[in-house]
Image (spheres, rainbow, N blue to C red):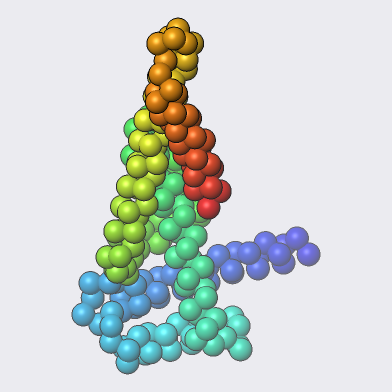
Length: 190
């Protein structure tokens, strides 16, 4: 039984390698800059080729089966590739560099930089979120500074010198500290 499961695993590995190789040949399915990337008839023909390959192992395979398999491969590769890139960017030494653990990682390297272009709103949304976070942290910093001023004023200024107006201003500062912290807590839970 052990030999059978090993041979099945070997066949499964061999099949996956053949599938990846065939997928790589069908550039209209993955190469964003290909002139046929948006050609539906070419894509249909390419999917037909891949369906034929998969049906040798899974006779009831459909286009959905092939698309799911491709998406799973791409998603797994993308996650592994992000880890690899992140270790390079972080300035990790050669010993700390992430080594991809995905056994078919090298076979899918042709997918690098081949993601479909996203609409520009996603990057502007990210910039807007970053700006919002920066604004909140600036507000927090400013509020904490004002709280410190308030503490120094109350602790080290004789009560005769403190005018009622200043006390009201400092109360406002104290309340704004509290509301800023609540806003940050609300933002961090979203």
